[in-house]
Structures are given as C-alpha cells and as structure tokens.
View (cartoon, rainbow, N blue to C red):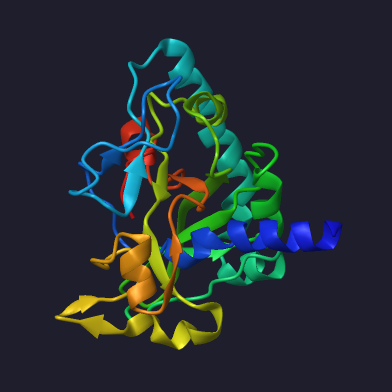
Length: 239
C-alpha cells in the first residue's frame, strides 16, 4: 500500500515535465487571496488552463530573501552549464510536443518528490535551458514546484509572493496514459488535448476520450537566476 501511494505521488509530481513546454502570458487567471481556498478562480472563461498567484506589495525583507535564493541557486546549478552534467545527476528532458520549446525543462523526479514536503533551494525540480543560435543549450535558471494543495501562505514561505509569481495548470484534458500518441490531435484547427485546448470541463474531456485534470497539478515557478541581477527579470512570469 505504501509503495502504491508513493507511485501515485510520483505520477502527480511528474506533471511539470508534461506541461512545461509552452508559453504563459500576463493576465493569466489569479488565484484567490491569502486565507481563501484555492478551488475558486476569477476570469476562468478567459484563461481556463492557468492560475497564477496574486502579486503582493514588496518589502525590503522580501527583496533580501529573494536575492539570497538567487545567489544560493546560482552556486548550486552553475555546474550544470553542460547538460551532460545535468543528465548525469538525474535531470532528464522528455519532450511532450513536436515543436521545439522556447525553454527546455530538464526535470529531476527525486527533487520533484522532495518538493512535496519541503523547499530546497539547491535542488530544484527542473533546470531551464534556452536554445542558442549555434544550436547549443544555455542554462538560464531553474523551476521549483510546490504541492497542488499549497496555500498562498505556503507558497510565500518558499518564495515571497511580492516578487515571485507561482502558476498552476488547471482544467486540462490529456490523452489516457496508454494513448499518449494522441497528444497532437487537432479539431477545428485547435489542439484537442493540453494547455492550448478548448476542452475545459470533465464532460467535454470525456466526450473526446481523454482524462481530465482539474486542479491536481503542482504549483510551479521559474527563477531565471543566470539571466540577470534584476529581481523583476529573474522572476518574470513567462516561459
């Protein structure tokens, strides 16, 4: 029974690798304010597949804490400038879509599991790379994850919400596990599955033979620590 629970948790935590390879934009659906349950969303019809944490007013303490995280993260991941070193330490890139992503996520399953219980700056869930003109991949930062049921207070405890904006993928219709080759299916010029799909409800997903994931995906945040010293650029919410 314990092994089964661990397997289920690992499956859930694998979600960042599955949904990371696409863009986010400003104006995504905000999460509820502190103290409110995470189940509600405003503006859901406009951004049905993404929820972001609300930005708070920054304090000096927040800036100091965020700067310390950046410094510690840089020291921990600089050795992964070569993706071969990352792979050797358990970071794996598994593309889910045919087109090349703007940001490549090399994900470590063990770190993803650890993130469900604690925040470890030196062991992020994923390393982030961008493709250069010469074809090489350049390390730009890392991605952290948090449990799907984390409150805003929990997220703020990991990274200040006045500076870092966490996001969560919601209302997703995905192919059944044995039919993942259907991920590229399109209807009316739009993907049937995934974060760009027009399918947003359990009933619609059932109708196309998929599996619906309402809010069972972990929270995640990008920290572009190798890109800049400016906090706004480091924690910019897009990828």
